[in-house]
Image 1 (cartoon, rainbow, N blue to C red):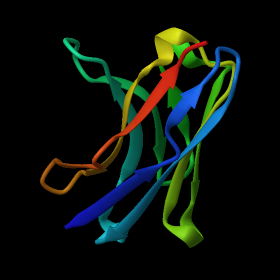
Image 2 (tube, rainbow, N blue to C red):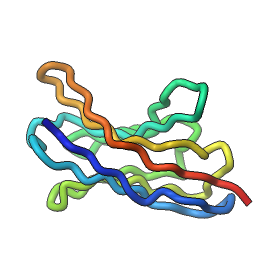
Image 3 (spheres, helix red, strand yellow):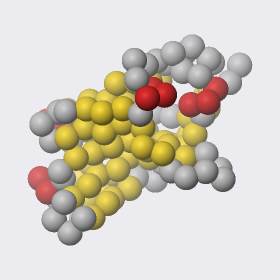
Length: 117
């Protein structure tokens, strides 16, 4: 079992920045990679960024150059630094942990990010 707790969401003006955090607990050593997803009402949950155990990162095109995903293994924490935020980034952001053995996905409770003037 893995537990994930997100924090750091909020209201920010266009062009502003936020940093999301996701603290993992439980069977952390079994996690293969982690990711951030986001979802707006009426739409599918969208993969935003992912990071492997070795630190290799990937991003959806719409956030490349603006968002940075990172992991601090000592703190069991994953981050998403979001800069130059746009109104279309408004969504609930979810932390995800994937365990290959059994193809298991764990999810956090989500944190709301609202970009508005």
